[in-house]
Amino acid sequence: MSRTPLVAGNWKMYKTVAEAERYIQALLPRVASLEGVEIAVCTPFTALQAMVDSTRGTRVGVYAQNMHEAAEGAFTGEVSAPMLVELDVAGVVLGHSERRQLFGEADRAVAQKVLVALQAGLRPILCVGETEEERLAGDTERKLRHQVQEGLEHVPQERLSEVAIAYEPIWAIGTGRVATPEQAQEAASFVRALVGALHKGLDEQVKVLYGGSVNPGNAAELLALADVDGALVGGASLDAESFAAIATAARDGAG
Image (cartoon, rainbow, N blue to C red; front, side, top):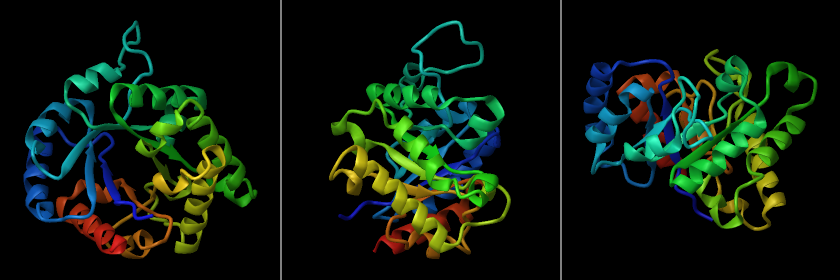
């Protein structure tokens, strides 16, 4: 089955609104004619409205980097799905390893967020991945099985194709280290098989992305892999030219 690749740039805690505006004006001309690939920027909360306004009618979607599972409540510093929907945000990154490791997000909370995002009309990118210690101990498959099964636990079968799953080896995020093509394909294939085990026959409908020090130099090889349907890009997405080059590689790899 042919799956349109998705390339999402996760800015993390970078770019003021003014910086984001300069960036998007540099990016849009570079991807205006880039058919056959979905492109998204995952911006800080403060830049969401500005980026939604600046990308209307373009190929670039705007995603949030996190959200709370409750619609409202006494949760200081949090943002809800209805708040994101009001801004016309298209999707949201959920369960990123930095959220799990640095801010204590639990698998069950992430699973609830995935369902809430779908119910609100937001497209979730569910992040999964193992630490270096887990890989060295041979626990990669155990970790991925737990995160995928838990993360998709509440997703109705008919909504599964709306979820993208980003495999991010934690040891490769922001380190400059990259999984070999063989490691990336093996993990992506395993993630897809896990989806098929949960919902038979639907694994081919789910986008599996790779994340972990993706850059223009390694993107073509990674994005041409059979079970990799795009990338969740960190540092390399902060430069418009670099990010556009990765999106072009995804388009070419899918072709």
